[in-house]
Structures are given as C-alpha cells and as structure tokens.
Amino acid sequence: MQNLIRGWTVDGGVMSDDASERPDETVETVTPERLKERIDAGEDVFLLDVRNEDDYAEWHIDGGTVESVNYPYFELLDGIPESLQAALPDDRRITVLCAKGGSSEMVAESLEDAGYTVEHLERGMKGWARLYEYDELDTDGEATVAQYRRPSSGCLAYLVVSDGEAAVIDPLRAFAAEYVQDARALGADLVYAIDTHVHADHVSGIRTLADEGATPVLPAAADARGVEYDIDYETVEDGETLEIGDVAIEAIHTPGHTTGMTTYRVGDVHESRSDSVANQNAPRSGDVLFTGDGLFTESVARPDLEDPDAAADAARTLHASLHALIERFDDDTTVAPAHYSDAATPNADGTYTASLGTLVDTMDALSMDVASFVEYVVTDMPPRPANHESIISTNLGHTTLDDEEAFELELGPNNCAASEEAMTGD
Image (cartoon, rainbow, N blue to C red):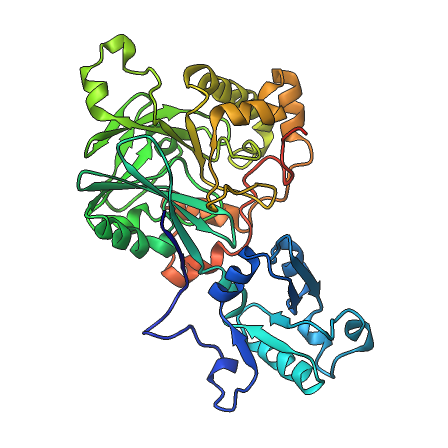
C-alpha cells in the first residue's frame, strides 16, 4: 500500500507572500503537509484562524483532535485582546493560520512576544488547498486502482492502470501533473481522462490532460448540456465501454445529481469479450463502481445544482438510478465516490470506499421509498459550492480561466452531498 501527501512548490520553493519574503522572519512555521500528519496521527492541535468570520464559517480545518478558534486579523491590529487571551492555551502550541500566510505570521509574532508557544501555517489555507494524497486500493480486479484525496475540499479522483495503459477519472485541473507522473511511475501511458459529469465544485482537468496525450471523455448526456470545448474529445453512451490494457470501463448512466451523471464500472475486458451477450453485464468479483457524485460512502447526491426548480424530480430520478445499481451489482462490489465530507469515516488506510452491501445495510436513504427519499434529500440541503455557477461555466467550456484563476475559484468545501451529516443509521 502506498501513501503519499503532496504539497505545492513553485520554481523549487514554496509559494511566497509579503510576509514570507521578510528577511528578519523568526517565528516558527509549519507546512501544510506536517500539520496534516499531526492531525492524522491524532495529536492535539490548537488552531487560531484569523480569517474573517464568513470565510471561516464556510471553510476551515477540522478534525477529531483539532480545537479551532476564529478571531479575525483586523481585530488584532492593536494587540491581543483579553477575550482572545482567555481562549488561548498557555500550555500548548498554537498554530495561527490565515488565507495566504502573511497575516498569520504577524499575529504569531505578537503571540510569541507575549510568551505563547506559537507557529504559523506556511501559505495559509491556499497551501492547505494544495495538499493531495495518494493511496492504492485493495481490489480483487486486474487493474491497479489509486485514489487521490484533496483534504481541503473532499474531492476524490482515481487512476486506473492496466498493462501499460492508464485512465484518470474525475481529474482536477490543479493536479494534472500528478496523474501523468504517477501513471509513468506505474509504467503506463495516460490514455483517457474521464469525467463522470459536469462538476460544480472544482475545475476539471480532462482538457489539461489532453496536452499530455490523454483523450478527454464525457458522458453523452453531460455533453448535451452544451459543452463547447476547443479541442477534440469523445463521448460515451450508457452501456458503452472504454478499454485500457486488460480492463474495460463501462459507462452506466445514473442521472439524479445531474442529467448527465454517469457511473463507471471497471472490470476484466477479456471476460466481457468471451461472455455471451446476455452475461456481459453480470457483476464479477473485483468490480469497482466509480459513482461520481451520485453515491458517497456517507450520503447521496444533492439534486439541485443543475436546475434548482427541478430538485424534487431529480431526486426521484436519483432514487431510481441508485436502486438500479443495487439490483444489478453484488454486495461486495466496491463503491468509489468522487467526494467525501467531514461526516465520512475513512478506512484504516485513509481511503474512502465501501462495499455496496455495507452502504445498503447502513445508509437509511437507500432503503426509503420514493416519497420518503425525495423529502429527505431535498430538505435542509447544505449551501451550494462556492462559485458553482462559474465553475460549471468553465467546465462546459463557456468561460476561460488561467491556472491561478481556476485554483482560486474552487477554494472551499465541495457540498455536493444532499446532507452535511451522515445518512447512516445506528
């Protein structure tokens, strides 16, 4: 099992801001990678987040052993007020963070002068958003399957490698180079870059990966939303397959989250070729379902991002799509979603997957009738992803952004699930 945490560097060094360029810097810093390691190890972490209240409410670092206090930087310009001093520990390390790393350094210096044990988060939340984790999944299939995780937003992507060829599913533009690098490390060329649907929370990397020789692929039903790319790309219909090495990637139209939402099943291509037509769609040991934003390990999709006025109808469609998957595939089929939330429980290796049978047994939403499901899904949905309309426009090819603009646009949580809480029973 491989595990990697990646951060971001520019020209061989970290991203700079006004504070990090000061030659008299003395306050201790912590990298996003090191802070994530502490949180994962269960260490007690105390965070002082000095961004404004709205930014903090929308998106902040959390964890079971993380204590976080928000106190906006502009309220600290004249020193550390008594109300904040009362909230700060004097026997623990305080990690100060802001958006980019400049304000947090100055606050950390003030705290250090006041006698606190303190550090600041290098590059702030922008640095945190550059973290990217990699793990290879344990499956019974012929392919090597790796899961990528972006802790800042919960976005998941996948690399599927077989016999010298590779495909990446739901790639993020910000990490396009990672997929190419990892495919090569596994002795494969990246053949396909595939999206499950038109994403609303991050800028897709399928067009960027075309520059590396990969063929961009969209579901035909997603293309029907009015995609306008200035490069060649392919579409797949329900039931069609793409082949890489010894495995087939089958498209299964599963609308509900969006009209184009498509699940991809990865299985042995040679078995499919030798089977009778009647048995080609039969589930097999080692099947992996890349369910995109349709089904997560802790929840189901929200149905309102494409057309808010049709959310109830989309929820009914989603119910039918999910039950079609449940009826077709065995309980031990692996479900690999495109996102996870704070409500999700990771596997022992840090990955977010689950067997289909486990989800059916534990997720209340999957046993509801249509009316109950619709009411449950459309009630109390979380806020929509930040900048979702601009991100959708970019992913449709209607808006053009440079890399930094695209990165800034997608900062924050994904909020693509119907609920911020786990939809599981006791």
